[in-house]
Every structure is written in structure tokens, then in C-alpha cells.
Length: 544
Ligand code: AMP
Image (cartoon, rainbow, N blue to C red; front, side, top):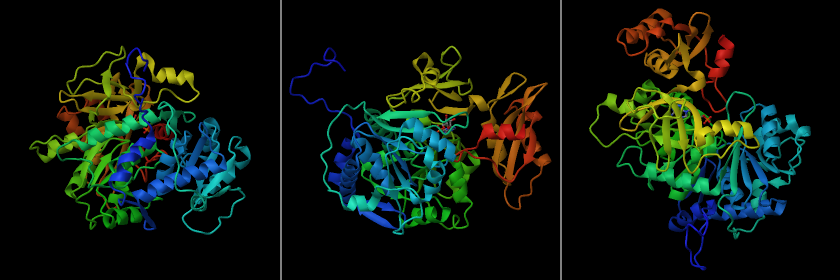
């Protein structure tokens, strides 16, 4: 901001919105609060602050400078949390590598982001071994491991993480710098073409933290995130900063639990023994937990779960509510830091059906998010809960473009709004509901059919474990819908019964009559993307 706009006395301090400032209050206010890693490690916020300083010293000692890019390949860990802070606080850029991409795609992202250093968990060494001779930019590697045993690898390490921290000073004077300095970068998980890099500044991450904290911290009761909570992510930390929650949780000063490699056993164990009260995940992960034999007996009655990354199916919502879980939806994408909307239930007397309806909506825009649902001319469609258009957004925390990709950046930001590619409607109460991705909408005889709506109806049948509906090319209709359905073990379900169920909604006028063209195929499993979402593009290619 220029001095034309703000009159400042010479001595007033122009406070930059830097990630380091998120640490000021929690470390002082509650130094004994705990950070936990699996069933292996626990330490206090006071020690966390020291470990962040040690990591900064260790990284500086191996040569990391402001402007360098430091990549991390790890499971959700205390180490990752430390990197979320120490790397950007040094003025370097944190590249959270999507370890579930193919080795060739990982090589592309390392190269494209121009990573200078890689901190790698021993479990991911085989990936680096595979692409080793072709990594040009990386100067040094740091080993991350839980045990002590030297892994078998031909890679040379400048050191092991804990040993480097042990040898480092526990104090570091983090300098102030421009709040617009890039703090993080990572790559979209989309299945089309090469991954695209997005990037976020200190200012954006601080404002995202504050905006999301206001949204989550202010409801009267449902889904409120407060200082008595215990937080555990079940979203990979490489995926959009674990939705920004490690920053929120630390700024709030809550007990944090990092589960490492996801196994249903460990997740359920930590949820119950550490008394976790807030998590976030994609529906697939919750489905995995719900299918675990120990799920039925686990006490999860104080657990709040924010579902995002894909629509929350009504059947899953009902099952979770029955178990006492406070489940609700949020929405965002890699390009948006991510949080854009949250579906809190208003503090009113609502029936279970009404509750489910709201919890499964995409949500209301959180503070500072200017969200519009627009037609092709960027005109807002009526807020009638029925008219659909594309979601476009402005907010202080959206990526300003794709890394080194002017053409796609301009497409993303056409008309000065970030185009999400999501089709939705919005009602008078300001709740948005995504009905599809633009690319996944099924166009039958010129009519747009929501695949998510049909999936929701299919999943409501008791014998259905999972379903995905896709459009396949058809000479007469343009596209015809195909439902891929995974049955529950021992389910008494056949194509005829499933179609009768769907046709009853056509007869009642709830869904378009074009849906009678639906065909069903029972399958063993449904292909997922690297972050556990249904891979509709892949399915279309396979079932064409
Ligand atoms: P990604 O960039 O991989 O995080 O994917 C972002 C996309 O996931 C969005 O553009 C949406 O299509 C989808 N998505 C995220 N949250 C939701 C939600 N609550 N309901 C429906 N789709 C969602």
C-alpha cells in the first residue's frame, strides 16, 4: 500500500503478515500444550518453538538461503509441521511434494519447482532412486526416519533430520521481510496433462488462517473449532497445506496429533486414545474407517469431521450422525489455499433430514471470500437453489496463477475471477451446493445432469458401498450415464432393483427423466486419484 493511501508517522511499524507471527500467542499462552506423533513421540509447544529454531539453524548450516526451494516428502508428521513453519520463516519456499504421483510426475514437479533441497522419508527413497540420475537442481538431501537403522540407498545425505536438530542451536532470530514473499508451492493433483504448480505467500497464508479461524471459531455450537479441541489431520500434508489446518491449529494453541502413514488401525487408535475432537478428510478415508471392524465399538461421540475434496454423500452423513459424529462439509481446491466455504448447521431446531441436507451442502462462503455462481457471461444466476452456473471466486488467499504457466494462469483468472470449474447452485440462505465439475457434468440430449445427485441416490441404498456415475459418448443422446457400483459384502442388490430405485425418483420428478437411460455395472473397486478422490476422467477412458 502506498503512502498516498496510508498516512503513517515515520516511526510507526509497518507490521508484515508473516507466518512466524502465527506462533507468537500459542507458544507464550500455553507452552505446555502437546504435539504428538503416532504412538512414538510427544513434546510441548515450548519445545516445538525450539525445534523450529533448530530446524532453521540446521537448514541454514547446510546452505538454505532465502529464495531457495526446500521440498518435503513425508507422511503427516511433527517434522512436516516444523517444516510448515521453519522453511518459510527463513524466507525459503516449502514445496510439499505429492508422493502419490508417479515417479515421472514427481521428477517433473521437482524439476519445475527447481527444488534446491529435499527432505525425504526413508519410505520414499525408492521413488528417488528411480529418478536419481535425472534430478538436476537438488544440491542436498536430508533423511527423515522414525527408527535408527541406516536405510539401504545409494543416495547421499547431508544428514539425518533428528541428528541435524540435535546439533543445532535452539534460538534463531527470524528476520522480517516482505509479506508477499512466496512461502509455499505444490502441484495440482488433476488427472489432465502435467501437474500445474500453485503458490502462496506469507500474507495469503496468514489471512487464510485468520479467515478460516473466524469461520470455524464463531458458530454457536455445531462444528466449532476452539481451544479445548484436539486436532488430527487425515488429509495428506502435501495436499493444499492439509487444508491449512496445521496453521490454524497451531495459531489456536490446541493439542495436535500427527498420524504418520495412514493405516485405519493407527488412525482409530489415535482418535480414541488421544481423544481427538477435530479432523478433516475426503469421503474415501472416512469410508475406510467406517468399514474397519473396530469402528463400531470406538467412542467417536466427541469427534467433529470436516469433509471436503469431494461431496459428502447423504448416506455417509446419516451413518456418521448415528454414531454421534459431528460431520459437515467444506469446500476448496488446490488453487484456493484452500478453504472457500463451510456448511455449518444454524442454531435452530431442525429435523434429521434438514440437518443432513445442510451438512451435505457445499457451504456458505467464509469471511473475505467473494463467491459468485455465474453464467458464461459472468452474470450471477438467481439464488433460488436451482439455477446452476460456475463458481468463480475472489479472496485474499487464491493462487495468483500457475507457476511458470502464463497461458493457463490467464484461463484460470479470466474476467479477474478465479474459475473453479465447479458447477453449483445457491439458495436464499446463501448455501452453495456443487452439482458437478464442469468436465464431469453429463450432457444427455442437451440437458445437464448432475452425476453427484445420482450418486447420492444410489449410495442411499443399504447394499451400496460406493458409486460413481459418468457420462459416456452416445451417437443419439450425446452422452449416456453409466453407474459403476461397488456392493457391500453379502449385499442383496441387483441391477433391476437399483434401477427401480432410481426410476422412482424420475417418476416423482425429483431427477430428470433423461436419467432413465442410466446403465449399471457392478465393479470390485472404483479408481481414485492421488488424494483419494474418484478419478472420473480415468473411469471415462476405461469404460468408454
Ligand atoms: P483439489 O484441487 O484436488 O483439492 O480438488 C478440488 C476440487 O474438489 C474442487 O474443484 C471440487 O470439484 C472438489 N471438491 C472439493 N470440496 C468439495 C465439496 N465439498 N463438494 C464437492 N466437491 C468438492
